[in-house]
Length: 192
Image 1: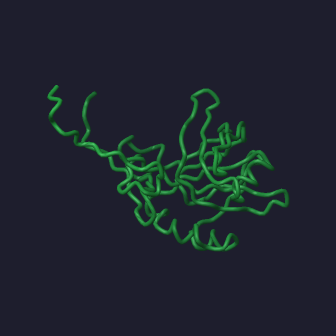
Image 2: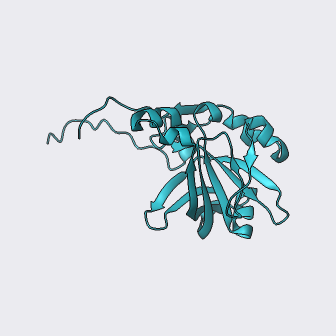
Image 3: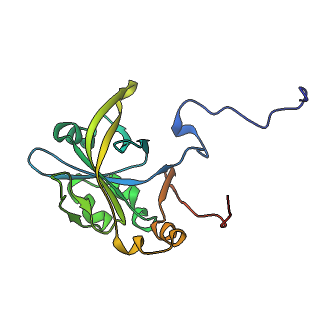
C-alpha cells in the first residue's frame, strides 16, 4: 500500500447532528403508547432496530424526557407503526404539533390493540405491538427501549404480492437529517 497517498476519508464530529450527509439514516416509525388513563400518544422516531431473533426483540431510541418513554416504562407497552414514505412526508410537522393534534396532522387513524397493548395506526402497512423488556439509559438523558414483539401484523394484500412488489409497496421512509427524508429503493434483481 502506498503510504504517500492521501486517504479519501475525513473524520466526522462526534455530534450526529453535525453529520452532513449522515451515513446512518434511520427508518421512520410512528410510536404509539398510552398512559395509565389510556390517553394515546403518537410520536415519530427514527432510531429503530431489530435486536434479537429470539423473542423477537426490537428497539428504538428516544429522550428519557419524552412522553413516549414515560408511557412505555409506566405501562410496559409500545407499538411501532411502519409508515410508507408518503405517510411519513409530514413527519416534521407531526413531531412539532401539540401532542393532542398529532394524529390529525399525520392524517392517520387509531385501531385498538388485540393484546391489551398500545393501539396501532390503521393506514400504516405494518405494525409491531410490543411489551417492554429492557430500558438502557445513556448519558445526556437518552434511552433505548427494547420490546418483545407480541404481534407483528401487515396489511393482508401485501402478503399476497410477489416479494419484490410487496417491498416496493412498503416503501419505508428514512430520516437522514432534519429536513431530509429519503426512500428505501430496491436495486436490480440479482441471484446471490
